[in-house]
Length: 144
Image: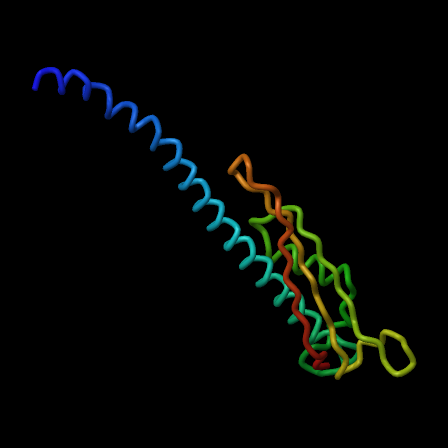
């Protein structure tokens, strides 16, 4: 009995030394997964907000008596609006495109489609996971 206890003396320390790094790695991966889901949710929301901003600022914006100071949205205005809506994230890229009319021109008329794409370079805190580019696209028809 005494001989068996002598061999078991350092087993708990060895087991802890093996399991602890794996446990910490698992926690880091879970943390990165949640951060990635949060970042994707934020850029998805920002893309939808950008499209909402553009939809009500088409070529007829400002002609409605309730919105007299509005003017048609430009790509830089939409980008600024999206960047304000995605404050916790940095390194965001915003791309705005409008569909072409029958003369192959961008007119921003009601009925045409506006698309906003928001991209973000997600950098992991886990050392061996590579950086990932997350992107979200939102598009809808211009209202007025």
